[in-house]
Amino acid sequence: MAIGIEATFLLGTFTGHRADGSPDPFPDPARLHGALLNAAAQGSTAVLDKVGLHPSAEALTALQWLETNPPTGIRLPRVYPIAASPIIAFRREGVVRKEGRDWKDKVGGRSFSDGYTYDGPVGWCWEDGIPDNVRAVLEKLCTDVGCLGETTSPVRLAVSEIEPTHSLDSNGSVFDAGGTELRVPAAGRTAALTAAHATANDKSPSIADDRHKTDDYPAPSRPARQALEALRYRIPDIEPTSAPWPTVVLLTTSRTIRPEDRVRWCASLHRALIARIGFGAPPLITGTYPKGVPQPANHLAIQYLPAGMVAQHDIASGAFALLIPGDASGEDLVPLHQALIGFRGFSADRRHAEVSRVVTVSGDKFWCAPARGYVRRWTTNPVAVPETSPQRRGYGPEGSRKRWSLRDAARVSVGLVWRDRIAPRRDSSRWFEEIASRTADYGVEVHDARLLHRTDVAAWVHKTPKQILVQPYRATLSLGRLATERTLVAIGQSRHLGGGLLVPVDSPDDSFATLGGGAR
Image 1 (cartoon, rainbow, N blue to C red):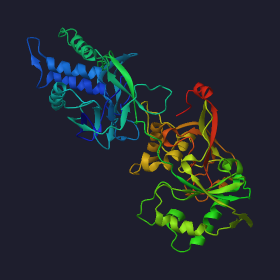
Image 2: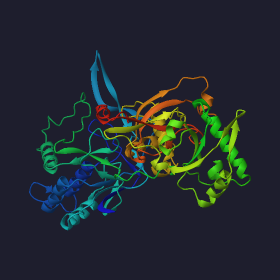
Image 3: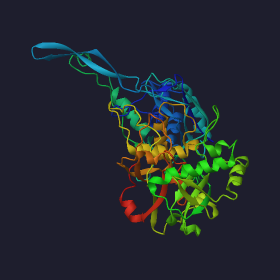
């Protein structure tokens, strides 16, 4: 927690526009500074002289402190557009023009409902605190701010403790994945806005200049752009989250499994284990949870790994890997342990796979570390399958709808593995779109994604909802801060039964940097 300014929108919505006219999803520090300056010039702390009202010396000191001390943290709640598609009202605005021989009362379009709603207050905070004299002035100015953004966004500002969701990244590069770029006031911003206001209100226009002209379109004044800079805020750097499956039990076997047969063999092993446990097998193992019971992001997963993928664990043959999730309880693991005692093999497609050894390794230290000077990316082996159908995305500021891509589907597949951290609550119709967006804050990048055009697509999934099209794809991606360079991960449909395994692909660091980090 840090001291800062919290904004609660009284109608639950924020409406504001950038300099180019596009909707602004949330108020940035520059907008906050402008609102406080307006309050200082017209509110209860303003000073009256012969010219009129103007900010007090104390208020100017506080505003100049904001210029030289950008917020070290911000609280950005989840953002939802008010309308899924553009709403434009067409009306006559008093613009009359002669076109040909006729005079026409022109019709203009105005956008409506292009604001956003949040699931909580917005906040800006300073880790080192706010000087007492500045804080006292800001508390007074906050009470005089009536709206933040347009007048349809009434707000209540207050100086309070803030729990930031993003931190200032002063050393960040444009090639670093994730983060949110925001405008912040720089030194001289208060003077620039004051000068712009003085110029716009220098003197009253003459009667002739103030006369209405029927051929003029509405021309709102443009905000001053001087003394602004863009800073990037990111989710604070944290240690990589614990592996989704921190424990891996390897069942070595001499049976070689073709890639297209992995799902069937893993499903057969799954059935064999449940049969050995018998009645009362826990949901952690079956993957089936009673109605009303929240389902975790991951349960027991089974993957087949060829010999080359387990050689680092002194295993010469291939192995079936039982991936144990981190939230598995001892009560759930007892039946699995008993099922593995004396387990010698199982059959699938009238063929038998013998199990010779049981080896337990760490899921967070499964792969060998990359060589020095190399950077690690991941590729699906052999393929992954999306868990969702293409999403119907909202409209952009120009009225165009951005298409849902295969890379978006890959981001969702990654995010669902860590969904308990990224987006634990499915309380939005755009949950999948939200997950795809939030993975970028953790440094996830999808460098390449291509559909696999084959007729036997059913071989890559075990069970899938009827409304979801099975689209196996190959992808190359980076997991960012979600995982270490040695973590064993599987993504996508059937990741719990032989699908979507991610294997490391290392390349020289220089060649990777040349690519600019790939697509995000």
